[in-house]
Length: 172
Image 1 (cartoon, rainbow, N blue to C red):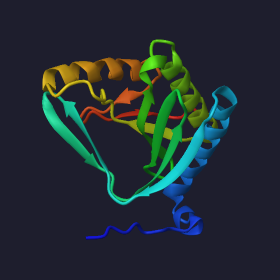
Image 2 (cartoon, one colour; image 1 turned 135 degrees about the vertical axis):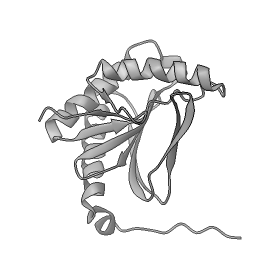
Image 3 (cartoon, helix red, strand yellow; image 1 turned 180 degrees about the vertical axis):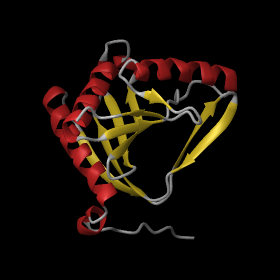
Image 4 (tube, rainbow, N blue to C red; image 1 turned 120 degrees about the horizontal axis):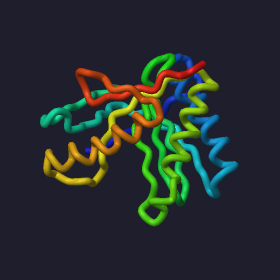
């Protein structure tokens, strides 16, 4: 069976205000990061269906995104994926610093840049802390995710009492 990918026009994608929020955030973030890092690229994609899984309170938790715009920013040092979530909120789907660049404060600099940009644009940032490739053991995965929750909390992300989601409210 042959798979086909539906093509979307920029006008079609950006007529949705939620997508416009992610588009603007991704483009401005790309421009800022190009000034700080070499070989930074931006790739917009329409995700037909997507989800994220996490461990929360000892159980598996899943969030379905449905169709949305994803802005992927990549360099030889890091990968950042942001999703359209609402007209005011972008979803930080992933922020990954490549192994050879870890423990140098790069992740902290990237997150600080995103928080500053969110404040300037008036966007909130939502995320689900997941320690990628940490383990298949639920207790160990939850411990690794707790370190991430604590890290995000230090950037004023607040916890949701009913899910592993966290949100940064713009100081706009």
